[in-house]
Structures are given as C-alpha cells and as structure tokens.
Length: 239
Image 1 (cartoon, helix red, strand yellow):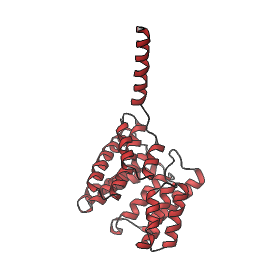
Image 2 (tube, one colour; image 1 turned 90 degrees about the vertical axis):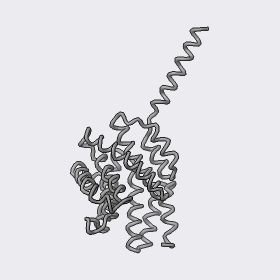
Image 3 (cartoon, one colour; image 1 turned 45 degrees about the horizontal axis):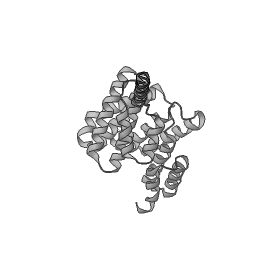
Image 4 (cartoon, helix red, strand yellow; image 1 turned 120 degrees about the vertical axis):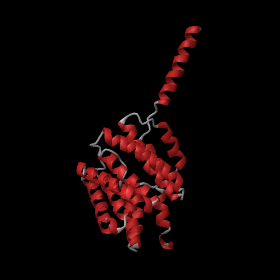
C-alpha cells in the first residue's frame, strides 16, 4: 500500500513538473494575438521563464504583440510597461546572441513603439538605438521577411524628416512578400498576413481604398481570425 502511495505521488509530481515546464509556442502566441486576446497573451507570458534563447525570443515577440493590442485598446501605460520589459529581454538576448537577426528586428520595433508612445521625449533617446538595431538585423539577414516587415512598419510610422517614407515602407513590404513567396516564411511562421495588413494601412494613408480593402481581405484569407485586419477593413468607409 505504501509503495502504491509513493508511486502515485511520484506520478503526480512528474505531471506537475511537466506542466511547470510547458513550452509556450509561437503558434499559441500567434493565435492569441490574431484573436485580439490580451488575457491569453498575458497568461502565456507568465509561463515563459526566459532562461533560454528560444524563450527569450518568444518573450520579446510576445511582448511586442501584446503591446500592439494594448495600444489598440488605448492603454498606453500598460503597453509601455510591456514594451519596457520586452526591451530588457531583447537587449539581453542580442548581447548573448548578437547574430540573431529576429531579435535585433524585434528590438528595433519595440523601441519604435516606445518612441510612438512619447515621441517628443523619446525620439532622441531611443531613435539611434532603434536604427542601429534595424541596420544590424538587415545586415545579418537582408532577406528575412519579418525583418523587412518591421523595417517597413518603422519607415511608415516615422516622420519623413527623421527618415520615414511611405514609398520605402511599401517597398519593404513588397520585398518581404516576395521573400516569402520565393523561400517560405523561414524559421518562424508569422509575418505574411501582417505584411498585407500593413500594406493595407499604407494604401489607406494614400487614400487608395480599393487597394487597402484588397490587402485586408488577403490578410483575412491567410488568417481568418485576424481581428485587427477585419476591424480595419470594416472601417475603411468611415475614415
């Protein structure tokens, strides 16, 4: 009887250990983001311990995604706290793995979002670091579609006096799509639907509503649950 009790206890402990070491996947992060589920992303973030390079890149990616949703919900304070955490994670990662182009690109995107929250005070503080991070990412992997996407987002959201350009942004989006069509998405699966969303945003800025709608529709063909793409498409006639 005692042996059975001990055996059962060992099994329970093993199951608890397996749960504690549960792996947070890119797919789970993607699904939560595309569904616009802030709570699900926050729960996934708590499961990441950040002890290994893969956990670190996923944590930085998750924080970038989570902050995007929070900004969309007009919760700038919470978004900035998440971005600060992501910045620290990614800065530590690139220090340990300086050849990780995805980490450099996410760091650039994270810094860019922090600038966007407080542009008057943070442009000088983070602008140079964001540009350096993106330059490093492009040098390491010039054909990486996610690096190209994040670079395009930065160019689209940066004032022209500081190097921003809608034309150059669209060129980066198109180059990113061509890279996916030629070689697939690469190490991670996310990116293609996002490229179409940002192309749609660029077309909307240019008042090309039909082209914007087509881009949002294409994003929804790739990821039917992409709530932000649906929201942008459905609001085209009101902006």
